[in-house]
Length: 59
Image (cartoon, rainbow, N blue to C red; front, side, top):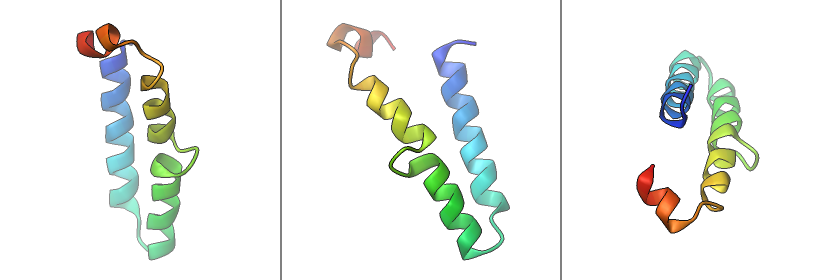
């Protein structure tokens, strides 16, 4: 699986979690899972910071 496929899968997973949230607490938990301090999307964005400019442009 390449990086773009992994990103698309992560986005789909986040969308599904937000859609399934039935209560405000469920929504908050989904938000924390993906966007929190050590959330999956947050970790991905931190990893992007270590890429060189050339790598960022090629991806």
